[in-house]
Image 1 (cartoon, rainbow, N blue to C red):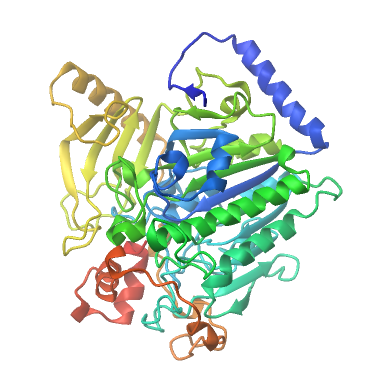
Image 2 (cartoon, rainbow, N blue to C red):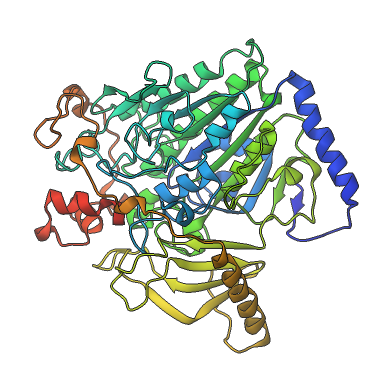
Length: 573
């Protein structure tokens, strides 16, 4: 039987005892290996709340991720930092809301960075890797970065000793899985590496272009286990951030996993990622490092429902990626590892937490101080991990920004970056949109609500039944949320919008040319002719026409590479 922790108090705890338990637990970690704990972040791409077996999916094959849940803490109310990729990842890496750091997107609809984006994670932000370096950690990022591609924006420009991976989404470059993209706007998908030691002044090496995605997950496992080592070092702890390219469309699957699950190609891709989690977990066990390693597993945002069943599932939650409905921002969240030291595990925890809490939690575990010159939205979760404090409420409210609150070019009289707010058991929507394709795209169907729609989110997590305006319950929730928004905005300062810094073709990774618009950027042509696990046509809503309309907000007939690149930071996922 898995214990279930309900949100809110079940019993009265002596604060002194809670602190004592927490002190003893953190002390035991250090005593177990005479070092601070290793920290491993496993970050899925577009994985929905309902996609894992441990979260109720009836046909998902995820035994290894489910093992993390069955040996750790499974959170049911874990929120991402944003509804799409780049903003969410920037939030986790800095512990701050994307809008605070100029990473929420070009306008109120939000969006992500593209291969030619000039902007990226700002250098004046303190990254989690930089905090870990202060604590004496070795640091490496492996996988999808998607926070900028210049020297200053790559992981090695933000505190990581090494980086290995595909720097953005697998649908943003030509490959055997996406052979029809325009080369000038989306050069072949690269696999790159960068090391601070070998490139002190920046720069990276392109290993493959295009990359063979069939081998990518296995390479990520090898890079991870090699960096972890055999546990016989000098006690120097390590921090690894592993953002998988799975399960973003196109659903790439190696021949080993193709056709092995009941969920089609998406399920096969998910099984391949699950295998990778299992291999890394096994390595930690074999090398005796599991007892001294904290494992975080979560997703950047909800499932991309535009892709139909190729895009995943939000379970019973409403909608998905690209929206601030629960399905777009509530994701799986698991804390595991530290064998025998987490409190009361396995357990299900219903506390409201967020991905950006990892930042403050990692700082506490590493014994380093948080920056004191800026607002940190993340909260240290160690009271939940070690003391089992059932009175602990990390967040009174969660603020869901769909895009930037500062830009005025949105096509409406009023532009609103803050689309939804949850306070306690209630959630208000000031603006809504749906991710289903309606001929305009998910970024042009905003509906403003004044007064806001309010849902009793604990009783109605599917957001099916809006509260009746004017009732006592509605009035109380409205007053609480609007007061919270007023206080929240007092500490908000406008910063440069990274998505509006423009594009530069010459920033795009290219293995064989300086002028990226004329070079082929193909150095591994054989990788266009590799095994592709083909999904059935009905599995996906993807088409080149759909991609063009979504990227550019134009019809296929209006498409040209220039408009695609200039707008990809606005509306691409």
